[in-house]
Image: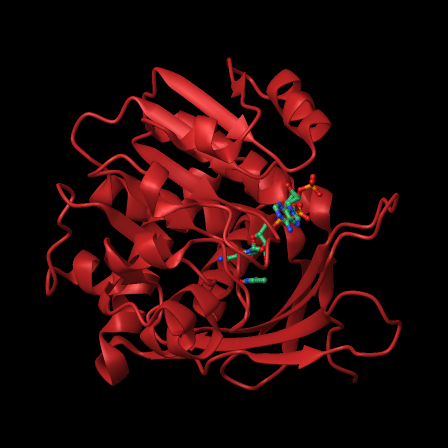
Length: 317
Ligand SMILES: NC(=O)C1=CN([C@@H]2O[C@H](COP(=O)(O)OP(=O)(O)OC[C@H]3O[C@@H](n4cnc5c(N)ncnc54)[C@H](OP(=O)(O)O)[C@@H]3O)[C@@H](O)[C@H]2O)C=CC1
Ligand SMILES: O=C([O-])C1=[NH+]CCC1
């Protein structure tokens, strides 16, 4: 008798079982804390392998390989994610991902899941966790820089969890910011410059494919919280040196930040804590200071998200 073939759970099914990113919050908080607990936390996760794809010319393109095991969840996955600068006039998304879910007891591949919805939602959920801990007490203005996939997923969970009086967006291509404002569920002010969008904002999300700073420390209100989601290569930037050096810096993974983050490596900014250390209570949050959460994305976030979707899918089949 042959073994049972893996199931395929496509984007629509993933979306159906993960209709709100906030469903992932408890699992992600636990995973971040377990990751930062070292061996005792039971998370096995190397810094991802990122393979450049030099053929085809043009801007750099990458394949990321992201394996992780979480003992607390007894879940084993690898995400494969390509990130290519958006090709002009192409309908192909810049990031495409697949998650392979294994049975940890025997190594059998159980499921192949679309990873793009998972990537969009778990990233935004982790930024929301950072924001809950690090934003100032009276946060009224949310600013999003970028109008791509991550901008939408961040908007959705931030407006679900927090009450902002105003939401602003800036995007390099203004028409996409205008489209964003017309598609989402609440009012959004479209700004003509990043400076206009950022000035006076309490919470800022940078979610672009920029390789040079788009956010300057001069513009940032003291005490604001910034979720820096893009710039995941050692020579890519979203934030300038002034902001990096004059804020308290939180990361998802120290090892990854010191390997992959141009904002961290090139500014020489000191890392204050991993988000998991704050969740565990071994480092303070300091919401009264200007704070940056430098997010690179961790494989264990995909592990717990894929398990969540697989369990929900299995319960319905
Ligand atoms: N931390 C994490 O866990 C994760 C991080 N990411 C990162 O988040 C970022 C956004 O991803 P995603 O939303 O999926 O990407 P999209 O391709 O959907 O959107 C990219 C956005 O970046 C803008 N942009 C591209 N180049 C520049 C530039 N040089 N200067 C300013 N803006 C620019 C685009 O503007 P325009 O409309 O003008 O083209 C668009 O708004 C990426 O850097 C990605 O790698 C992604 C997944 C997980
Ligand atoms: O965590 C992730 O999937 C990614 N981070 C940057 C590009 C893709």
